[in-house]
Image: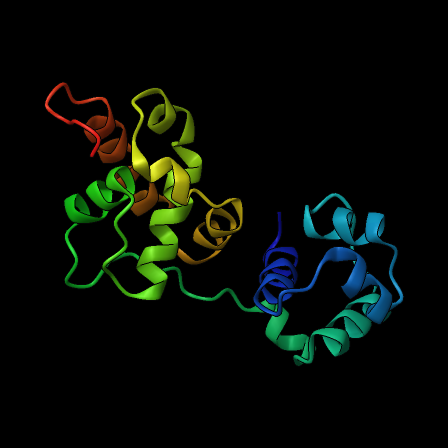
Length: 157
């Protein structure tokens, strides 16, 4: 997947648009837009300009990679991992959405251990986490969630 295709997907999701809705505005079929976003199809200049106009961004903005978040700020990794398992969401909106996304990714483990965090799982939050958070941070958090969920000392409330 190229930076342009990732940025088109990121901008579309940020605006809450489906591929069909963006495709209608940009005069691109949903199948073509799906292939563009997944990097299986190259863009023509005309298609790029129409997509950028439909997203209300400058075409050049689709060529720059946004920085991924590599830290949770003052919130320790362990606290977020425990929040995923327990279902608690006491943090900022973006960290809580990250926790919901991690719960989606760990849903089988959480359900197997009857963790209340499984009920907070969100595929959309996982998609946003992929687009906004560094993969190394996500990987470390996933490992901690698996460890806490399968810990013999953890008991769901």
